[in-house]
Length: 84
Image (tube, rainbow, N blue to C red):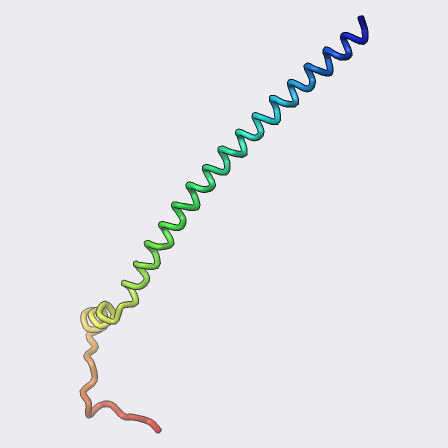
């Protein structure tokens, strides 16, 4: 009777270990899918921020801001001095 109990307990332990491995595998799979979605969101955000940065650095925008906000004008050709 004892050998059968040992064999039965070994089989039950093996089933518990197999179930634990499957649960851990599924958990890691869910974590990977969440991380991949987050990566997609961050890539999209990076693209959006790159576009916004290009817009903020555009010469037209800087010229408008220079004129409206600071009251500056482009210098006349006679005001420009070239240094050697």
